[in-house]
Amino acid sequence: MRHQVGLLSRLLLRRHTFRSYTKEEISAHNTRTDCWVIIKDKVYDVTSYVEEHPGGDAILNNAGGDSTEGFFGPQHGFRVFEIIEDFCIGELNHS
Image (cartoon, rainbow, N blue to C red; front, side, top):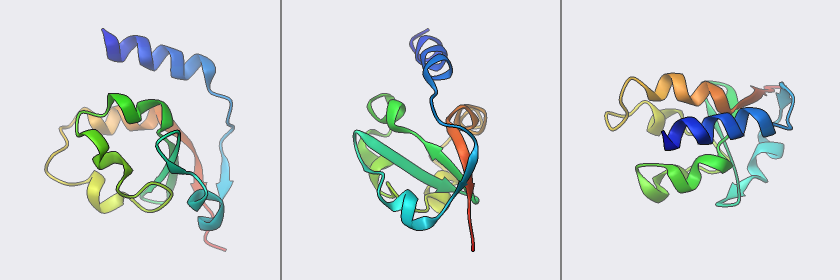
């Protein structure tokens, strides 16, 4: 239930639009209170999930950078692949 309420809040309060971000822009969001990550060239604002993350502060290991390898590790169950899409705010700009 807690996750469902948090998910609803995130969806209702989302203020970012889907767009393209550079690595430099993403790297500025590297703290517990402002946490973005890159996973397979998509950009996710996971700030609102940091405190709920079952793996504790591990979510901060790649804050502001590429978290693809850690995300696809054996610690994550199948459900995480559905949950993460709720946090997607854009894509990585490779130019």
